[in-house]
Image (cartoon, rainbow, N blue to C red; front, side, top):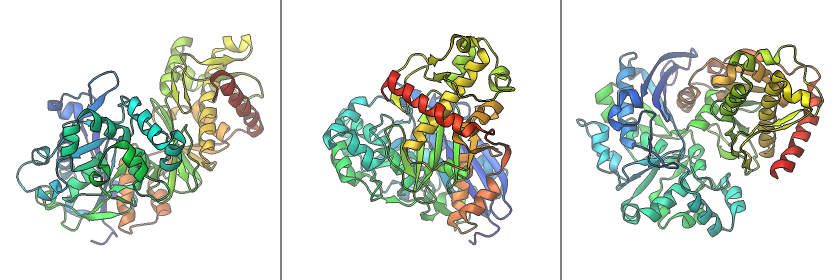
Length: 518
């Protein structure tokens, strides 16, 4: 099938839902979308929010739920769109979860008739998959780091220190706690490569973008790091799929989907990736000069990075457009803003807008270290923010709101700089707090960059569709970004603030060392 004039489908399997976006790459339009909510639409899995919590630190989801979600999603999409017009499909999936199978040939055995979950369920060697929320592997992280000579090796080789939610530590826990099930496992997929395999009807590889979120891939070679593998579990190398560039076409769609949903048999399946690399593409930040800040429960900064410096406060993943991306995830995001709002007794209108009216940043010593709880970027323990400044400042509700937001933005800026992330010309905002004019202006001031809000609502699914289009030669990355990643409003840095925030950020860093030693 020629890429010109055809449709491209992006799928996004997130924690709570499975979504699809079909785009016309030639016209730059979204032709159709659909979604499945796991809790509402698949109640048989008893996962109201897309996961099952087994303990305070253990979180799981069923791979069969993801397969049933995929089929229901395609059924809904087929009611809106002629799926025979789809030229290629790619996908975005929540990062780090693993799916264990007792056969590497399971996907080639898919036949017309029974649904996917019934056919593939018999090949699972582990019924449930630990997901990104699981933080039960602190001991395994310590064991792996000690075996390879310390966190510095892990960071330098894989782009992240040992991280509880990452797949390597989760595999080691499985190896230790369930040795018989591990021995029976012939293939360990990420959920991205698992779903890609189901669509292709063959054992799919893992792409560089998602593979980098495992603490197992070498950033230098883009292959599995043998030292990390041996420190994680016995015989692991034989159980993992191969690693490939993100733009790899893994084959044509399985006949199962051609017969059941009406796809063209020539429809291409492009390697799936993780939700963060896919959102990098879906927000247009896969090319230089742009970055994305997602303002949600956690605040996340990510940008392309040609020569990133691994830093314990951030992560290096593969960029689907080539090279790498740097990512900083800050736990004290919207939850910290909400706690400040409640403690001051103000509403969101005051917090997001009124507190910033007629405000000009000043070269003063009023600073908040904005950590209501423990932080991961950088790693520190905290139970309350540190408020530094005059007594009048500490009584001024608007000033406190502004200082909290400034502190969050300065911390993000400092952590991004440690990874050698290039200062962007434009930062695209997504997430619930992106609507706040005050927060947008503060980020523009601190980074010295233009800030824009994006029109797209599901950047991960859109990024997957754009990746499918690029693979088929429908357009360049720049062309796709120009068509689909359109801003709908802008904030420029205020006049004269560059020097002010250079000094203020230096004071912020000094205060972080004084109070937290980081």
